[in-house]
Amino acid sequence: LDLGSLYTVSTVDIWTVTPFLGSDESASISSSVDGVTFSAPVSVNPIIWTDGFTNTNLRQGSIDVSTLPDGQFYRVDVFDPAQWMMINEIQLDGVPAVVPEPSSAILVALGGLALFRRRRA
Image (cartoon, rainbow, N blue to C red; front, side, top):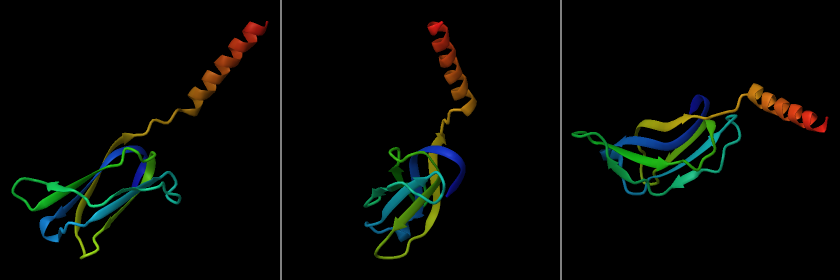
């Protein structure tokens, strides 16, 4: 999944329908800044499914991925060794990652140099 910019993702929710659930589904989720090199994955085995919406057969598996590094790209692999499975939706919950502006870092460095020069004089 390409989120378009850098994000800090805390949870990944996977939605499926009850008829396709067994008890041995697992998931592996990793992040990447460049879409080529991915982090070590967060793995969950088995996925714990909970009720989704009232009066539907949708079920939700919520996975804590707060230990993953920030990323623009996320890889979500869901496995079911016994049968195929239908994924209805994947939802990533997070916030845009805070990246310091280069100009701010330069101004701080210049301020430090000015202070250093002033003390030497």
